[in-house]
Image (cartoon, rainbow, N blue to C red):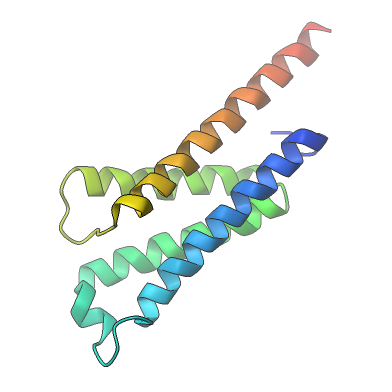
Length: 129
């Protein structure tokens, strides 16, 4: 993917910032920031804690990849967010999120899908020239 075109580069950076903020929010949940004296492992369960750690780490790495305009960042973001939403929609009790969290994750997937379509159209236009 060519993320170096000027409009695309700004769009990718915005997606990277949203991914970074979502990953940092998940990391704060892992640390138990709003749980008080309760352990996050007890609140989330061991499996839920592991799922959240994997998705938070993947989202943070994807944010870095998108920021440096590497195509693996978009692939990692789609993979992690897609699996997380799929587990949530299938009713896995270990994957928990609020309605705004679900909406942000869905918007991230849509934004990356738009990015893939724009890149595909740009590649096709260059091939036709």
